[in-house]
Structure formats: structure tokens, C-alpha cells
Image (cartoon, rainbow, N blue to C red; front, side):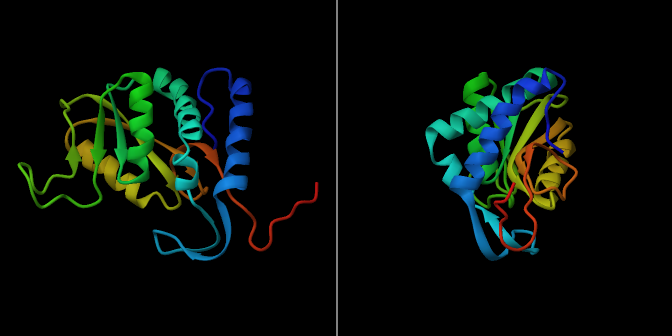
Length: 183
């Protein structure tokens, strides 16, 4: 389920094709991997090989601008860790403040036991960003934490492996076994 938004979806196809190519060339490895949710996969997407390049990160962040325009959030949210990188870039690009949603509450400082970092008011709209989603378990937990604070949340990921009910810029899945290069 690639998210093309309500705007001119055909104009977004070059960007989606570019992102798919970057994943294949820079971030994809084949092998036997255990994913964060415990599932096994014969490929892994190393998102940090994408996000560590400022040119690629900026271009991915720009892909979220139509989604920000369509949803009209008050805040950009990011899930720990990869979602925070994307949220920071999108926040900088759109001049919207951001929130960080932790996997575990911190146990120190002025506000121990809190999952959410950043200023917010009940009723605000949050575009919650995630990097790569497989089952969606963590990002859906993060959404629930924000909703408990009376925030209205829309979730979007950079990459979905196609197993979670989450919008994404791109759905990326490979058939099991060796990659086929035949047309």
C-alpha cells in the first residue's frame, strides 16, 4: 500500500522509483535475519545506509511534504530511533515542532516514566513517522501512547514490508530466495 496522497499521484512515481532504487542499491542485504518483531526474513533493509546520507535523507523528508499538507498536523512525531531521524528532517523542512515517542520511558530527569518528549496540547494533530515497518507493533503502540494524551494521530512510514496496517511512502517486499534480475 504505497501512500500517494490525494494529490497528483503520477507526479510522485519518479520519487517512489528513486526510493526503491536507493533501497536496492544501498540498503538491501540478503541472508537469514531475525527482524525486530521476531519474524525471520531472507532480506534486511539497513535504513541507516539511507538516512546517514544527508542528500538522501533530505529527499526522503521532502517526500513527506504532500502528506503534511494533506493531513495538516500541528506536530511531527517520531518513534525511537529511526523515526526520530525522519521526524527531525521533516520537522526542519516544514517548520513544525516535533515529539519523540520512546520505546521505554526514561527513568531519570525531571519527568521520569514518560514515553513522550516535547511540548504538546491535548487535541493537537500529530503526524507520527516511522522508518521501516514490518508488523507495525511498535508504531501502533506509539500511536496508542499519543492517543492516551488526547492527541489525534496519523501514522506514516518510509518503508512498509507489507504486513502492517500502516500507510507508507513505499511498500517493499521481495520474494523469498535469490533476487531475480530477469525482466
